[in-house]
Each structure stands twice: as structure tokens, then as C-alpha cells.
Image (cartoon, rainbow, N blue to C red; front, side, top):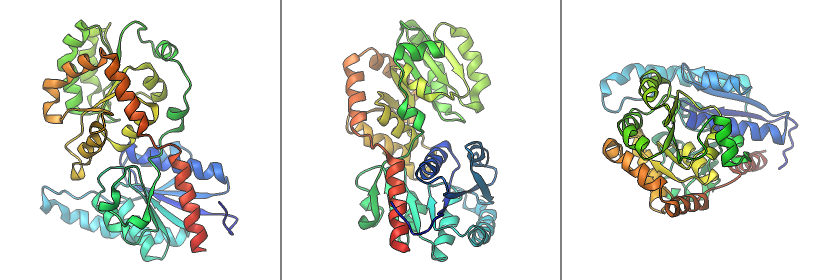
Length: 372
């Protein structure tokens, strides 16, 4: 990977959720590892979590006043259109000031106007589509993108086939590289050594359905001798921690688990939403999982993500509308079936695409070499 320029400038845009931010930071880290002189600027949406998470990772970020469209109540989108127009103007100013050699979009509110402005300015763009079902913005941007990095096969139904690169989704390096035995991981987290452990995660904010379903099942899970490591999300922390206090020998509830690398190694089974980032982690770690896709996402993409695994026997999918009734029994029957756990883990691992960040920066350098 070579380029005539001694210093490369890369603009990375997107965010809104950890599922967008973690891949973006992974790409930036890989660029810096390859060439520490690389100049990197993030562009996010004002008042979204990337405005805190990206600086915490050591990178500069600027915000756009962009917001998402309300697809159910169209009359609420007039202010959104004004914010979009303002974001396009600000995006052009960012390009003039930073002068990037390439712009990378990872999804999220800011990615659309930023990459559109870059394309209009003749700056090469790369799209990183994390889901098995492409979002509207990325489909619109694809025509003028130089490359589209994806994590699933069959993405030709959304994007020009000659632009697709199957790279996988970048995930946090500590999750992939952790070398810790299950017994040691449990000691580190204060978990019992002699019980099946189920890791429940609903994202940094939390997932109401998953939390309510776990709460409803705690009696039977406790009776079955199962220990629940419960990431409640900050929105539901107080309520869930009160419930968990009645099951001190069977539940450990907390708003957020920072050391997910250790948590994965400690668990026998994961219960989660079906965001692209979490699925990539499950595949790379080789974890058996029960996926409860969120119905509150664009194009119902989480259900399609979950189907991509469940159709190959790599995960169990329970629909959000059925979780309160079915999740507890599914956890008990699965975690007590070693053959089932082994099959799910093996099939998930077989779907993993490794070294995604490295493959993406190879694609970036390929574009820069061609465009120089």
C-alpha cells in the first residue's frame, strides 16, 4: 500500500449508535497503525454519542446539525429539511478547510450529507455498509462511490457489483484478541464458576423488550440454576437493578459492560439485539446466541441481519413481539443443550470475516493510488 503523498488526509463520517462508532474508530486506528502521520477528521451529528466517544478515542470530530427523517409522521420533517440544508453548507466548509484525500461513510445521520458533499466536490468516497439490508442513504450514495465495503454476501441487489468489497465489519480489537479462559473471565467479573452464565445485552441505551422479557423470566431462570449477566442500558438501569436485587444469587445487573471482551469469554450464551456490530462480534468470538431484532429500525434491517444467521443455524431468532412469551424458555432449553451450543458457536464462527479493518484500509489505499 503506497501513495505518492507523504501525508494522507481521511475524513470519516457517521455515528449515532455504537454500531456505527466502533467500526469508524477501528478504521481510524488501522489507518494510524499503518501510517501514524495520517490526518483523520471525524464528522458526526450534533448531540449524538459520537461527539463524546470519538474524542475519548483520541480523534478530532466536528458536528453537523442533521437529524433523521420521521417516516411515520411526515409533517414533522420540515425542520429536518432545514437542518439538512444547513448540514450540506457546513459539510462544504469542512471539505474546504480539511481538504481530505478521501471520505469514508460508516452510516448514521451525518454520513449522508457529508459524503454527498464530498462526491459533488470530486473527492473519492468509500461506503462501509454494516447490515445485510442496505439503508436508503447508502443506496443513494453508492452510484458515485468508489467502493462499498460489506459484511454479507448477496449485496449486489443493493449496490453495483463491481464496487462491492466483502470485508466484514470492523470490531474492537480487544474483543477479537482477548486471550482469557472462561474460568479466569468469571473470576474477573465476580461470576459463579459452577452455573451456566447468560450474557444479556441491549446496547448502551438498553432494549425495553429484552429487559422486560428477562425480568419476566427471572423466576424460572433462577429456579433452573442459570446466572444472568444483565447489561440493562442506562435508560432502564434503575428499574432493572431494583428487580435484580431480588435475585442476588442469580443476576448481576449493570447499565453498561465496558470489558465486553471478558464478558463474552465468561458467558455460555448471549441474548442480544441484532445490530450489525454485535453480530460481527458474536461471529468473530464464536458465541452461541439468541437474537431479538429491534422492530424500530429502518427497513427492518435487524430482522434481516438475524435471519442471515438463523437460516444457517448460527443463531436462534425470536421476534420482538414474541420475546416476552418465549425468551425465558428458549434460554433454558438452549443453555442446557451442550450440543446445540456447540453447533451455534461453530456455525457463527464459520461466518466470521476477519481483519475487516485491514481490508478496508487496503481498499482506501487502492482508491487513493488509482485517483492520484
